[in-house]
Image: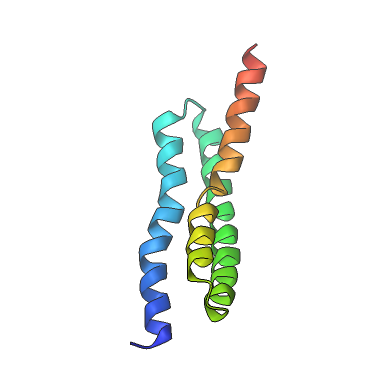
Length: 98
């Protein structure tokens, strides 16, 4: 199988998880107003796109250097970056209530 096809398959399975998990967390745990939620979702999607682009660049480099395990760890860890904005916002909300 060609490398391009393999990378497209990886991206097809990875992208939905990377983009939908932060949005799902916002819908399940959110008690913000609709406007604040839209802003958080938009920010989480931008964060997801940026972290996915950086992660794939790093992963492609690591795979070329034959560091497959490190590449998979980078993909796994990059899924957490969109949650940083959500976590910071939740902390601000808790600090404002006290």
